[in-house]
Image (tube, rainbow, N blue to C red):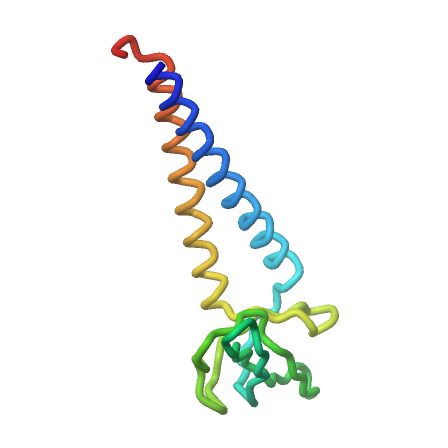
Length: 137
């Protein structure tokens, strides 16, 4: 009985973590495919949005491509502004439309979280098989 319960818990944990990691991995591959242009932009301001009881600060970046200047808002908002005005920031931009832009630092954090979820999920799946086929219990 305990063996079956442990197997079920580990399989459930593995399924949750692997689905989260897989979804994030799919998003990262999509961003890499669509947003291949790596540039340096500057923070030109912040867009403030009220979310529940807190304010979220979304940096607005300004960048130049082939002599044309563009502006775009980040997809990542924080409670406190994480950049100073006119601070240079590494960005990845959709080369076709220049409307999607991602901060490379945030993409690295997402990649690390995705790797951790997939690794822990894989370990949990391995442990579930270990408990299922072990002769001890």
